[in-house]
Length: 417
Ligand SMILES: *Cc1c(COP(=O)(O)O)cnc(C)c1O
Image 1 (cartoon, rainbow, N blue to C red):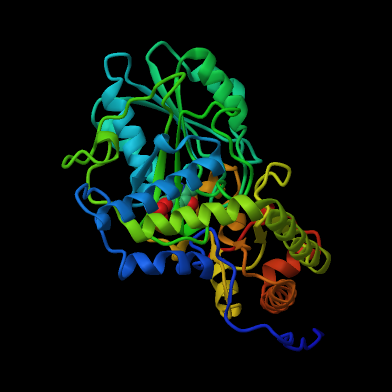
Image 2 (cartoon, rainbow, N blue to C red):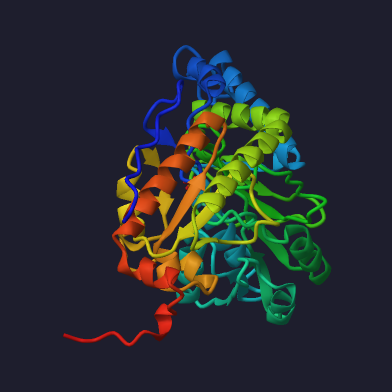
């Protein structure tokens, strides 16, 4: 007989639904909104207007934002190019470098768990006659340095490897990759959207030549991002993908999104000042969530290396439970699943499959993305709720019963009817 489980109580101060999907986007920090507001109203000037105070005021605000962003990643203000977000930054970096260094070579190296903004851009480059190597990852989600070394040849112009993964939170060996690329004279671009403001990033000590970041993943506004482009040792050149007025040192034309840029700057400034304390708090909450789930449930699997990991990420599979059913059961909690139906395709997450996980593990995965505005009380409710729903779903699952009895499900001969 199964026991009747009671619904977990909502702790005082917790409001439903709970947002725990901070790798998809983050809530705008009220301090960021405050910084932006004047630039939607009376400070509406065009930062490129050179003849009056409206323009100068906007330009001054943009310059401050450039400083704030640069400071967070150890760059200088002149090395920051504003874009519409990290998708554009990744496109600009890969296409712009590919075009500019075409004489030198046509080979690009990336890896299989990149964001689509990198993978699909690389596929486009292949259509344009470039050669692209997609490095595999190990079961932890990390690339092997030996694979990278072997992939480099005399036509390699660019290595593009993400800093931290948006699904499994795994942090690649960025400083090692940067050092190798620097020694070989190959440019190194990193999609650092999930890392900037969350873990220390320094373009100089890590030998990063080009870096993408985005406002809305760091409690800033949507529709604004930046590309860091190294100016010295080496001076990186990027062919513009958008032609026009020659803004942003000619690399990205278009009137600047002044309120968005001010917001991105403010978001970077807050992150720089609060990152250490925030990371410690997120890690404590994440570990608490993990511990509660692990101590109450069997047949669970943590996806990706926990040693090289973002503080706010936990990607876990609840085997013998369908991801979709689990998501429906916890519909007062906003999280993501690696299961099929959350995406346009029928395949489970390509990131989880790249780790060598079976479909059953990939399909039953949940990505918890903790952020600045989550509380411990929320974490406790989420843990209780997930445990409750997983237990209830498993009570209905004959596969779970069989697995618990020690039957190896991969060896079962299923009878066809
Ligand atoms: C969100 C995200 C992007 C896309 O950024 P946008 O600013 O939304 O275009 C790119 N790479 C990673 C790793 C991301 O998480």
